[in-house]
Image (cartoon, rainbow, N blue to C red; front, top):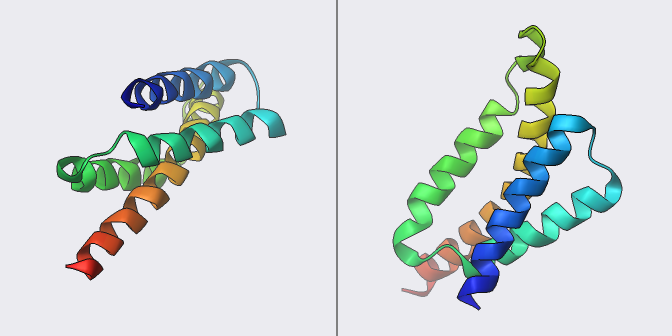
Length: 107
């Protein structure tokens, strides 16, 4: 199972970046990124990594709102790549946050 989580992360990140470099993500790509994100959320993030993962996730999501289109030549590409990464990371962050809340509430 551990390998599934690791491969899900690598594949999800690769898809997010590669698709963003060349085109807008289609519905099927978004669905794949969400499914891979859910797998990562369930399998990859351990108890010690929760805080760091959630902080990094929030940073990525906030960066997604930046005015990157103002950067000449590469701005549009950066926006697409970052949007895809956020689509991939957001489901994982939701799963990890819910698991953390559950653990806090159960103690």
